[in-house]
Length: 343
Length: 169
Image (cartoon, rainbow over the protein chains, first blue to last red):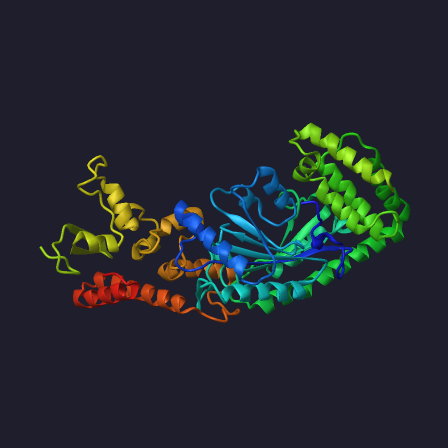
């Protein structure tokens, strides 16, 4: 669990603003009902069957974990690494995940659909992510009888995923659009072209750490290429908008931007108790500061790592025991102090 | 009395109201089970017969007249899900439901996706078994239709063909 997923490497195109690109495909096999109607014995049988197929499919070395046997803490860590969904972590019965060591591929078994294949890349890489996931999907469909209909495409438990079963999500770091209150403009424009925006951490439109995820809503009646194009056409304009706002902030009041960044740096370096929300807010400012050249002693991968390791499950894993909320605030502050003292 | 679908003794006697017309069917237990008709059996005396449950199981629309769509859609023969189940949970029960509930799903798909037809990639290999399953589903749907139209000779042919494809004795 100690290794950082490759997608957090802070590399790849536009990685100052695009944290990651993710594609997932929802797939089901014939002869088994969807998960909401499956009996526990049949569910176990399906898990065993899919596990064997995944291990023998040649999609690369995969480490398979049965999540029913895993501890809650280990499951939560996988959620924080975006390798499994919150629902999958908190689900019941025989279910699992196949993970590739680099952390770029994960295949959830018995989530809402029989298979949820996911590829994660650092930076803005929709085409590379697509090539990778297509390879995995083709290797699996050579062995498995996917539930597919010429009319409706790949059949999924929820009709909102039917067709391609494909969701492309791009995670963007947009602090300048938040500061300049331009985000609503982006939301409005995006919804007109059937893409959705939501806060990446936290609930609703308010996002902790100024991270926002843009994804396609439509999966039926558009080809995979059309879905990729809609994302590829639109994301660069948001990236450019964020960059312009950063330039404007620096041009209009450089001192205020520097003040914001260094105050955040100071708090992270000195706090004795710090909540997850505060940490996200200050790390976001520091991340922007690094990208603007205000802070030179930190790198983006180091900040990305701090985002991950200050999350509740990772903190507890780091300490080797369960921590209540106030213990976590102390332990988080200690972790950050340690990192910042080395700078 | 002999079963409408085979030559066994009919033990299930069903009166349905389909689009204002009364329709009587007489089925043996095996054929009734195959059609997903679940009625409190004599060997389950602890469970008293309830008219609402009977109606809800056999013809959901009669128990819930507001859902006009379900009038034409019996529970899925594969997974047993009803249109009401789907409306309640938002999740389908099995891959067959897309064909089985197509008439109810299309307006929803149109609303979510602005489309009702897949235009993306197809599996490189559509397995023989996938085709086989689709054929069985299509025959099952036809069987339901001919039973509703009381074309029992055709129904018997279809039933035999389905049994043969499923490898049932």
